Image 1 (tube, rainbow, N blue to C red):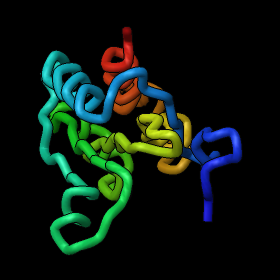
Image 2 (tube, helix red, strand yellow):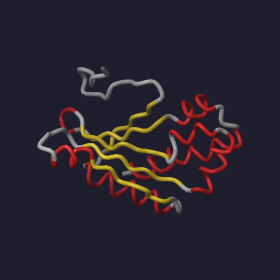
Image 3 (spheres, one colour):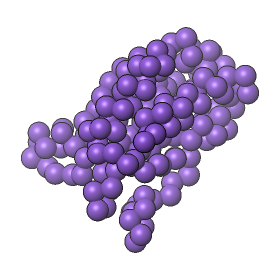
Image 4 (spheres, helix red, strand yellow):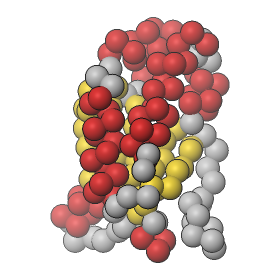
Length: 139
């Protein structure tokens, strides 16, 4: 199991990019949602893992997944590589780690590109995830 490092940094997992957020979980989620909407992307779902855990009497640090995308961008990707539908729509995880630090994690664009042999001309369709996250985390 990949536990946080002694330094309080998130675990290193192949194919996953994790960035520190200078904002609270709530504000990070709000900023991500605003960035998603500003790029005319659809927010398909917001899964509140910690809220669902609480509902069944369990506790965990905050963890939320936003699922978003746009059929105009995703469809050509799935035509080129049908198995990519396993990882689309795009997903971003906002979670609270040790010392209440807030993190934003997502699949690496390079990992998805290599895993599904995405043609170079379509890589920009998934690279939007990095732009959304960078926009949301700007101070």
